[in-house]
Image 1 (cartoon, rainbow over the protein chains, first blue to last red):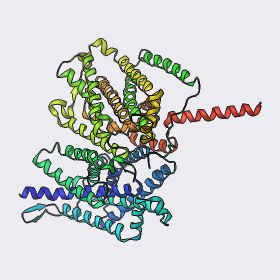
Image 2 (spheres, each protein chain N blue to C red):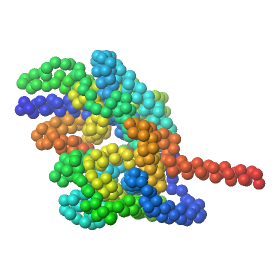
Image 3 (cartoon, helix red, strand yellow):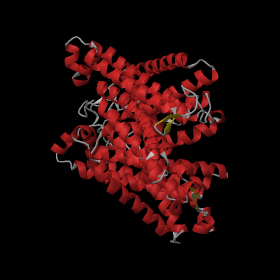
Image 4 (spheres, rainbow over the protein chains, first blue to last red):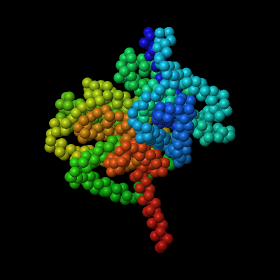
Length: 290
Length: 338
């Protein structure tokens, strides 16, 4: 039972990260109908920025957090104004947008390899010290931090989307762009805000996960696929369902890697993604139309 | 963006000028003969190896051009079929001792079979989500290649010594086989995408509902194209296994799927010639610029972004529209002077 609980704790922590990816992914999807395949590489950028600022520059966590947010905002500017907007203006079809996000992710990975190095770097946890022991279940402090911060972020995003005028307008843009524009919503600016929100959340996810799995240029894909799986499993609709689905995937992954086989644990996540996509209701099958 | 939006970026199926198609046909025939003679003209083993690299990447890219460029089904898992071809052929030859030609045919048939089976779930989804689904498929196959050690040899892969499997006489002439396969693939794609069927492909890519209303069997054509694409990718895998004489999971992973996508975009999405141009670029560019080795993905990533932004038809589409502009200018000039 103790083993099970320990696995569950780390599963929940990992799952919260998957949920954060799903959240970032869904924010862009809802605002623009774009599925961003670079989401994992953006998480990688957050993790690598954490490594550089915290371990190489020795900035300490509060300043590092600030630095990661700045990096995320810079990437937002590049992604939104360098790639997304020009392509939308040129009327690029869906497939070209998909390829563009993949190419952007490739550039990020290659840049990280060149600038920082192609290995997994260790990152100090936020709270160092021996593992906590709660009721016989020992856990890393970082797992708790991840879970708390991730859910706090989800709460903040929920607050933004339901209680602030900007958030509500952003939902309006997602529902019907033309009607929103007619009602006086500044659509392009709001879409930029959506990109910024998504990328900042994802980069902070990278910052959270770096102490557990390390920071490396090629860490993005494996996490991103699970995040995509969470988003699809949550029905591509609500951010909170995506978060819950992320938890489910994290738990399934941890438990199956211990009780079944660690070698096949990733396959389970990929299979979930595959079947969730294929068996999802019509909304997903239509595709590309948000 | 809805699928019914007018495509402003990719090339549309253009009605060709009278006589232009016949000229193209003879150019293609001449080029084919030239390509078939290439291995005899190239002396150095190094260049021969590069030629085979280009040819194998081209076949793989042709499979994606057919699926992605012509019918708009984006596949991020093309390496899965490539892997089926390479591994099936290698396993049949080494573990079961099947003669090479039979193993090749079985491997290609298996690639088509797998594509046929997975097309049923996959073709229920479109656009972004099809990309996600094929991505998942590719990753599942990649993980299985690593984990099914008794069958695939895990990370070590399977050795396929050419002189043993093919005999030294055939092994020495293997470049001709590779080039021959490339020509077969090229003409297959050419003939499939010409005429009524080719126009039906473009129609179902741009507006599936409209195409269905006009009597195009959308699902059947999509499945068919997916199958042919799977078979072509498997053929590329078969050749790759003999070319490198070893199959390892690294060569059939997500990176390969992405590389094919880059080739197709660089060359020109719905151009069969573009597939070969793109493959040549991706093989020769890092070879000729050695300092690129480190940052080759950076260069290719930026190149692809630039092409998507400024030259959506790829290199071939760009050259085509450039030539058209020059032609138009020249005719205008002659009109003015006369």
